[in-house]
Image 1 (cartoon, one colour):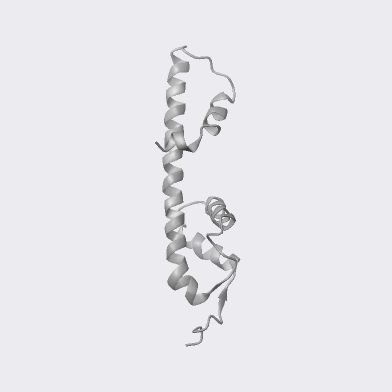
Image 2 (cartoon, one colour):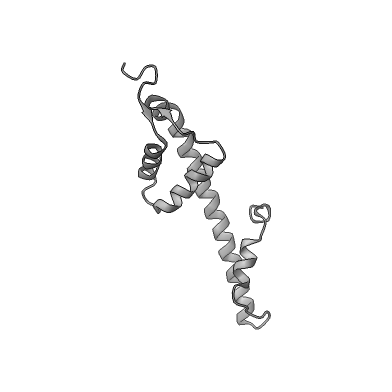
Length: 116
């Protein structure tokens, strides 16, 4: 029982690598952004004991990241649907296309309106 009292620690960099390996189908940059977001919200700590990470914290963090990805996917799909609707209006000459307008619209939509 070498690690019974938490003598072996995982650093934050090792935690990042561990999570990136679990989500290897996504880009490293995206997963790192999600990890940083969770870290800023104090949902991931700097250091865990090896056993504490693998037994208790890793499943919780992996679940939170999975949920974040699902939510982000829903938001992006709704934004794409909105852009498709707006482009249909442009093609019918109902609205005028202005460079960067659609991006501004999608960036300033409150999430509470997207998630309903």
